[in-house]
Structure formats: structure tokens, C-alpha cells
Length: 162
Image 1 (cartoon, rainbow, N blue to C red):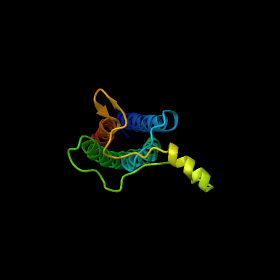
Image 2 (image 1 turned 180 degrees about the vertical axis):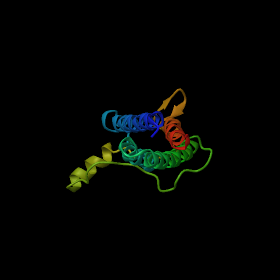
Image 3 (image 1 turned 45 degrees about the vertical axis):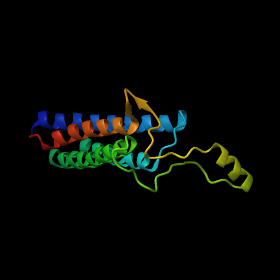
């Protein structure tokens, strides 16, 4: 058994878990603390991270060969997420059309008509083709593409390297 290889796989798995958890925490912070309503694509872009965390946990405890498989599956999941984020960022920059059914909203359904009317006055619907926030000129979807690609590279490289 090559302990150096196993240690490298474990480090990659830990980086995958921490990076995925931090990315989800940032998304929840923007949503729950700062009040940004996620659109349909934003919510879909979280799914690869939800998958990557269990794959990373498996890679921490499984034997070398199965750890490679788990990290490889995480890499594929995150590559899908990076591609989806590129599509989303392109729709925000009007490089191509976004999905026609994209709208956001979260929270419980109103109990009464009065509650429904009040909710209509305060609810902001998110549009997939409009960037709600940018940092250094790059939207959240663009940053998500970068993070997902980096984590996919870390996982995929660890899985493929002998």
C-alpha cells in the first residue's frame, strides 16, 4: 500500500468537502442573510456541491481504488456544475438566451388571501438573465463556474494521478 498516494487522496477529499461546504455556505449567506432570492439556475447549480460532499466523505474512508472512483464522480458532478454556471453567466451577459421558465422565490405559501397580497408586495422574483450581484465585474454564476472548475480539477487530478 502506498501511503503517500492515500494521503494525497485524503487531502484532495478534504479540500473537496471544505470547498463545497464553503461554497454552499456562501450561497446560503447571500440568500438568507443578504436577501438575494436565488433563481432556478442558482438553485440547480448547488446540486453538484450537494453530491460532492458525500463523495468526498466516502473518499476519506474508502480504500485507495474506491477513493479514486468517489473523487472521479465528484469531479464529473462539479464539471457539470461549472458548465451550468458558464451557461448561466452567459445568459446574464446576454451571450445567449437563458431558460424561458426561470423565476425564483422561496418561502412558505401564504395561508390567507391577505397574506398572499402582502407577499406579492414584498416578493422579489429572480431572473436567470439578470446578475443580482457582481464582484470584480463577475457575477455569482461566473464565480461559481470558477470554484466548481477548480474543485473538479483538484478531485479529478487526484483520482487520475497514480
